[in-house]
Each structure stands twice: as C-alpha cells, then as structure tokens.
Image (cartoon, each protein chain N blue to C red):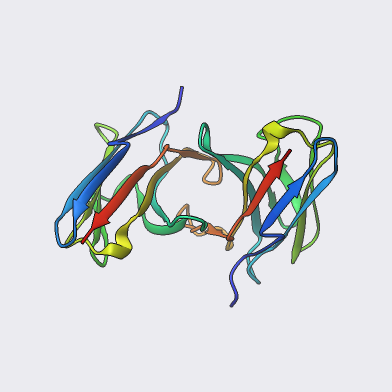
Length: 116
Length: 112
C-alpha cells in the first residue's frame, strides 16, 4: 500500500485566496483525521471522520475552515479565505477499524502551507 | 494548559549512546499512550502503543515504559544511530481513543 497520500506537498498562496488540501487514506481504513502542526502549538486535531461522516470538528479554528469526505477514498480540507496565521503543516492520517483502543494512526507526508 | 508535558525539549547524544525521554500527562481517564517518531519534513510514525494495563513495550531499540499510577512514561533509545535524529512525540488518549492529546515533542540529535 502506498500509505496516506496528500496533495499538494507545498502550497504558497496570498492572503484571501482559497486553499484546498487533499487526502487519500489507506484502503480499508474507516477513520480519517486532519491535523495542523505549528512550532508554537505542535500537533492539533482539526476534525475526524468515521465512515465518511464527520464525528468531531471541535478543533476546526473557525468558519473559514471546512472539511468534506465524499467517499471512503478522498477527503478535502478547505480554507476560505486564507490568512497568514493559517501557515502551517497540515497532516492527514487514517486508522483501521476499531481494535479496542490500540489502533495506530498512519500519517501522510503533510502539506506545507504558506500564506503571504 | 497542555495535558501532556515532555522533557527535555531537546538533547544531543553521540552515536552509540543511550538516552531516555520523559512524558508526564494529566489526561484522565486514560485509555492509551503512544510514542511517535517524526523525521524532519515527514509525518509522525507510530513506535509504540500501550494501554493502561501495560508497563513496557519494545520496538527494536526503542523501549517505552508506562506508570499509570504516577502518569509518567519514558522512551528509551538504546545504542543510538544517526537515523534516530528526529522529534519524538508522546500522545495520550482518554476515553475517546481518537481524540489525542499531543506533547510538544523532544528533538533528538545524534552526532557521529
């Protein structure tokens, strides 16, 4: 398996522009997570899905952020409009069906976003 | 306040030496604790997962310990190699296994 796939790997955009990050989870995994990592705040969970349904979006910073999972093999995280403080590395991770709390989350390579 | 505190923030060791990283947490109730390794420019990779009933877990030269009573965990790296240079992140989950609390990480630099 190729692992979790994210695109683009790098994104540079200007403030106010729309940014769309993409993720393909590992086949067979029914949980998908979006994280943001910054030097100041470390890793933060933004939202996660189970069987394509958003379960917890309490980590989404504000209404400018939205995430969708139209099918089991694809998810998007959209920022509209983007702001410089959104600059971070955004990770997507997926996890197999529940195994009594011992599930491992497999992370993608991340998208490095810079908003000018 | 972060519920997972790691120490030291960074350390430098010589190749072949051992080192121990610390993690203290206040997440309660506690479900499991994980150690992840994150290489520069890459996503975190799971090293170990321990539930509250487990005291130790090994993965090659990595050994994690857990004391659920004192809410402390450690990650011991034996005979360090240059490839061990990375950030090591302690991650704790409560009753919702999928809402993870992350430590800030310890950056390990192994020098020849």
